[in-house]
Image (cartoon, rainbow, N blue to C red; front, top):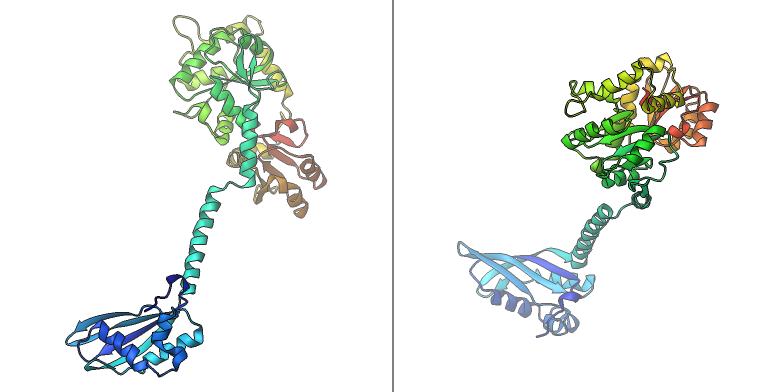
Length: 417
């Protein structure tokens, strides 16, 4: 007797059977072939259909209960819908199985291909979901390439060959960190005016830089960082000190954490006071703040004082408007929330938030809200289109961390608040 290939099955006829007595599976199958023989003509003879592979192996599942049997019959078919439906209907004509009466009713004709399609659909959704979660978008590709290129910009600076960024000579202010890994992390986020101490025994390069530049010392948030502050403030003229969050190193900080730490910088004297008056010096030497104060009292202007003086002169907007000053805490908080988001807040004159948009959409938004926007708080670089838009639509002020626009009349740097 031929078998139907499972691959070619199109439909399954599923029927319920109830018997008035106990019977075997073979009795049911014999009744199906015997009582349908000659009923539908030679073209739909079940035995011939099974030999040619158009009808598969008939499955019978019976259970006995209280002297009676009941169960299901499954007939696989590779024929068309009409022929399969005729075979299904013929099963209901069977009224006797062996010595007992029987009742067969077709429950349904199941399209095997639909269940396969359902499987394919569900599996495709799962595969697509995994693909979407693992495949980075174009912006992520761009960011990864940009970070990789920036880290290639690391150079060796001065006779001590210290690891440094490419803009060390071009900027008035430079960041001094502990090691090469710290330099690389700052380069990843576009901070290129940075140099690392890298465990050097000679401080000639840093001393020379401190005479010409504003030095911002950026150290790890651990005891090693505190020791570095103590050491360098005695070796070179340090203008500002900032520290990574407790327990973290500069090399592992995110962009937001870096900006937050840099905005919280203090002068060496203020940092010393914030550490309960602990001196940065060891032994019996005078504290750094006393050395600086003694230099000023004797009329000697140290290179650090000169650097800080020049730095302050270069800052625009030294007279911040009263309305900004009164709300500086809220504005600073909103500015910190935007760090790393490339977003912008729009505020009216009453300091109500009109909305939040991407920086690249500032121009369009200002145009649509013409006359309503009083203040913009933005993260990231300000394009010429943005500057033209705020002038055209009479936006009073824009708070930003874009130092390239610090000389613009309407721009207030976030770290001045």
